[in-house]
Image 1 (tube, helix red, strand yellow):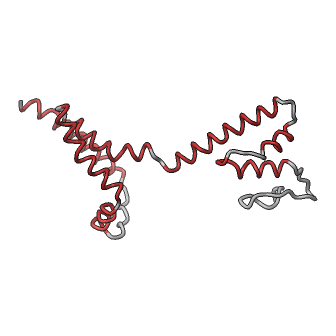
Image 2: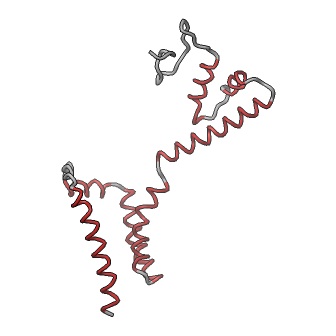
Image 3: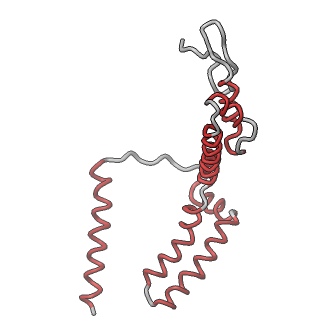
Length: 170
């Protein structure tokens, strides 16, 4: 019994030692102090209702999985999953990127349909501006406005506020 517990413990200590040795050899700069310290950070975290819900789920799910499977690692993994899965699955930026990609897909399909109807590229772009998907509506309208204007050194086209006001490099 002692030998079966001693081998994993020794392996874990060796891995932890190697993990501590790498930063010590590389010579990392000390981290800047956090504002408010650890107690303030814990107080802010305790005030977050989503984090309280995740902690409650972890407290209930970890022991339940341990009792059902008999595997301590499965219980720890289930408790950790309560905190990791919501962050991985519900990224705020991911939703907007997915919506923009879906809007781009809808717009390109519509543009392909308009082009296959024997209209030219400029006409298809002009017609696609009428009902663009909401996620990319501003960009499509800007593209339609700029496609009607051919810039020359003496003539400038309308541009969006995010772009430079001059169509030619200076």
